[in-house]
Length: 536
Image 1 (cartoon, rainbow, N blue to C red):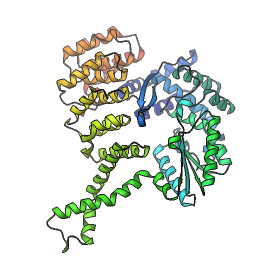
Image 2: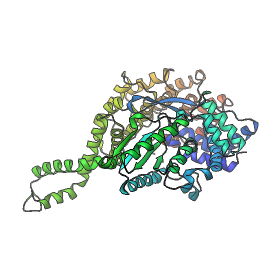
Image 3: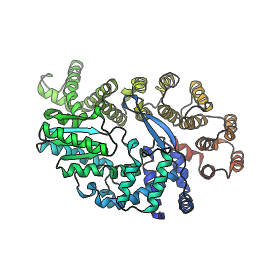
Image 4: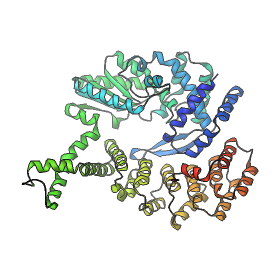
């Protein structure tokens, strides 16, 4: 039996990690949180009666080189049950896993720090920095050859047969095992392989799944380390590196997994450090070049400097200190340009890093290149939207976004959803062009449900009572619960008596929608606005 405390801990993880969901739904989670005790009690009751899992929402997420990752958005109750089952199964398996016995082999999804903080998992950022430092130490200890590789379609290709054989070998608890079996079968449409991407639970199942590989590589004495499915093996010569790679490929094949040939390589000597930290390496290359260019320009423009010879070394050192922020901005802008123009995995890292740093420094340089990034790198649309929200307070990119949305390049539901998310979080007066795009998106039932959800929210944020009544009239003809939730939230601006009468008429059809209506009744209009980015 899944204890109430375990369900509550699992909810905390699900809630904390919701920002990593393929579909961002902060209001959906807030509604659930407001009725948490009732929801967890309902889960316990449903488990006793034979828990049935819901169909997930599917959304294809563009990847690097425009391939697709299958995104799965599970019902919140199902996520809580999934996390609870896997937490129990993992804790039973943990004592025999290499990652729990040897501290410098597997760094991803650390449970050690989690135990100290009372949580299942610790901070991934701290662990990732530890992993990077460990890799550098391996190199500096004389291992000047590096094998890098990762798995093609890792989560999609985890075999259920092998996974459950492994779990049963750890004498896993029966109820959790059967619930997990039932859930995976439901979420993977009856397929005998694959786990949902994103949840902590899936990551922990992946760690159990790869333990046989970890054990073999450690037993063979390789300088082997792993972050999720990113493998690094350090060697003292090329022959050792080749043998280690051969063994890794063979061990993965036993688990029905194959390496990505494009990401599998042996690096030698001076090429290893740039692989270990490509962003810092590229920044170092750019720094001297950019500093020199900027200094030359400043020296030509500035009439006075506190030195007798403006071209002396002291003057240049002074400028490096005085204009440090300008130099850093120049490096970030150049990284952004390289990242958006090139197609390698390393250049994609440059682009993601530059977008994050330009956002933190409120540097609007990237706004001139929004359309180019959307067309060539749709897989960073979420980061691009966050960047635009941070730097474009007056809406200068709006015309560009509309042009993209109405172009033939708008082919990815996930990217389109994020642009609708952007408009749902903008509180400037909407142009008629924006409202027309939103209106046509709402009416087009071939659009993804998540895209229509945010189109409804965005349109209703600026709607008058007549428009809201038109939206209300759509409710009965919409069968999807997420669309109905968006309508319920949007009707908060109708006169209270009229709105509440409609909510009462709809009551009893769905527990979550009843909770959404109660949430609107109890929460101020401004409080709900804040969930969609409005400063109050």
